[in-house]
Image (cartoon, rainbow, N blue to C red; front, side):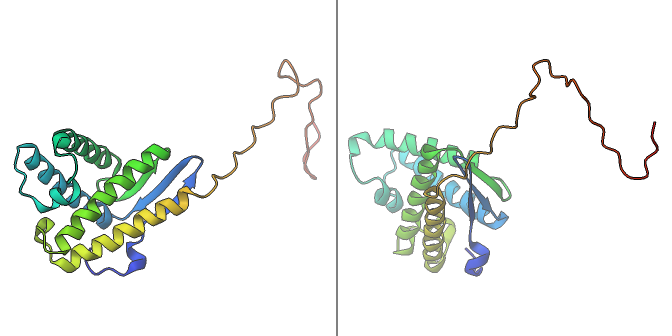
Length: 185
């Protein structure tokens, strides 16, 4: 990230019914978009049968016979994540449990990619290792915050407004309240 203090970097999470809402700063959204773009380039290279990327190897080391399917699914998840993420910061609404799991999964993959780069693998966007390590820590707090809010009970539903007690919608008696000093008609 760029040396911001932890409080400024924190993503704010809250509940709204079944949805979990996250608020990202413009800088946070930009960092995620850059990392997703880098990850997408790596996955696209792997789909072209270029399997020399240490980050891709760290993420997708099992089932090499199904690697193409995994890479295509990863591209779809990246597109899904980018669709949710505001261009310049703002609110993200994760509607339900599967939606949150998609986000957690992608953030975990970005963490693994950054950790691989921090440990000497190819660095996204030519970042120094310390910034990769900082991203690993920051993304962990984003995931932890989302999970903590997800595990809270959703707020209770507001009661339905009372219906008009008269079947025709009209009252037999109309009560007019007058304020002291109003003229009597």
